[in-house]
Image (tube, rainbow, N blue to C red; front, side, top):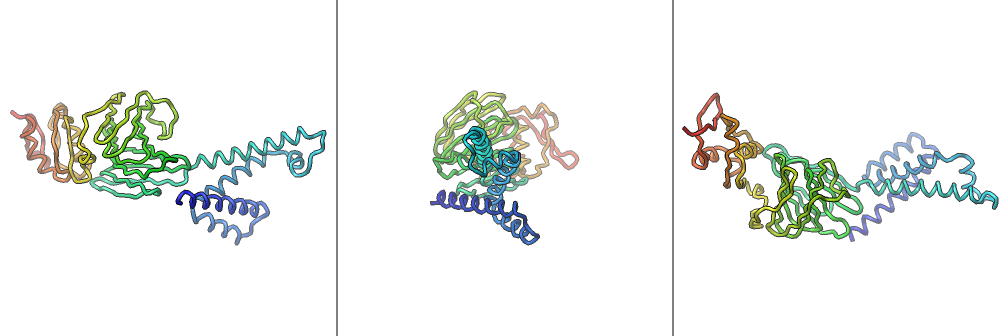
Length: 328
């Protein structure tokens, strides 16, 4: 029912746009121009339909006067081939116009959370999107597909099933394709991680960080993930990771940070995404120490108290900061 309503709205906008283009060619006074502007302001569907007709008009404007006359009147037999050629030009122009219109998104949105902020949003198709702190996501829905770019941060997707429009997520060089499922994607520190809470997703390495989610290029490697399964892309390689209990996927939604053999430098950077910690490494090489554990994302003080028990480090105050130094 929803798709039928969208199709009907699109046809209505297209018909109205055609009438507006005709009125504009005949000439619009000031009141007419204001009326057109008000009509365009109502919806993106109207603006896209109007732009498509304007594109066709621009292409047709390149036809010569002779070609226009042949199109406007029955062609004599001896000029039939010329008339057919002119018709072919017209058909090509219309085809290009419609192809251009089909390539434009029907709905777009950019979502961004700030440091320490988490967002919950429902998208146009009913899919739900949860953003962790300091995360940026771009969403674009087309007639035949739904595309999302995770530019940075991490997000949880609960995708509404639509067999006619697969849902795709681009994160760095990784492309995730689903129909309807719940999964998390993380794009931070030069690595991309995909974890499935429920359903199935296809994860592929396209080897081109600038490609779009809908890129048709052949993937270098692919994985199929289901409940609790994870994949990690790092240093040009996509590989499966140890599975996790599905209920622990995207633990950041409950205020927890989960680390498994992660460098201390990354752990500190992760805490900083939720607020200033006042923690700093006394020496860069200490950032290579590996840490595992589960910590409250907004309680850096508790993390600092635990740190000397988990790693061979000691804490000392210096200039209003807490330095993490090697244990003597």
